[in-house]
Image (cartoon, rainbow, N blue to C red; front, top):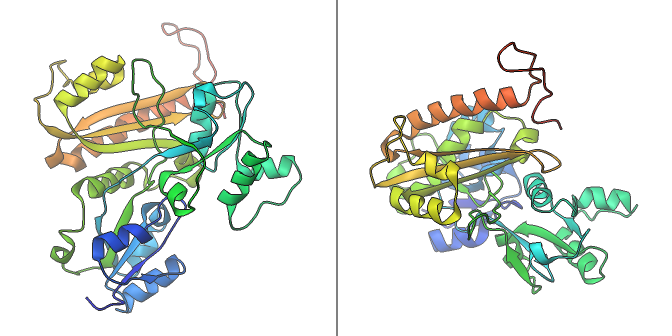
Length: 342
């Protein structure tokens, strides 16, 4: 490839610059926006564009109309947020004020502790009648924390490194570390760079760069939620990883996670054979953090599409019921409001 045959885009959910340098080991062109990336690829000015998956969501039709396809993906390295604060989340003072740009993380924080006042930076700026900076949001939030106007804020792990912050940070882990422990399933598409090429471009050239786990994560996320609105997407937490069945069972036992343990059984209730599979965990949390719907599934690596179809039907069937008020029924009892009331 020529020196300028590779381009990349950055997004707050995925800083691709450092990943591109590690993967391609050559100078790459930083692109201004998605339109420029599509135009350069379609005109043969670029061979490959590394684009965060969150930017592709909702633009799949534009992608196809330009004769472009997703030819690979880099694995998710650190798909989680960190809390920048003086202490761990559970040990913060009562009624702490926390800021987060991620809707699902805000809801998960409210679920963890009902006394927290969790806001988006835009909402905090509006309440306090101050201007929200167009750039340098991380430095602005750090200034608020340093001056004790807020108690902490969250941002993706890569963003913490990118902005060279030196304050204490605490990871919001996507899996519990102990029995009954809290966990924060990461926002969907976080830290997931896609390799976009023209249709017909030889994928063998990208075989050593593309990760199987990253490509599987994109396939599952796109199959299940590729057509969803941004409002629904922003309220979703999702984790897709390669895991062995034995390690999942050990985790389920140590954390007393009945949902995960049930995912390791087949339709007859028997344990699945011990082999590497694709673990998919999804959750939707209500706005006040009091109600959660979570679905865990273990999918065969050689039947990802079929597993996605089954999981999609189950998720949508149950989620639709939870989002609707239930009428009175002679056997199931009196009428009830919707489980999720936003």
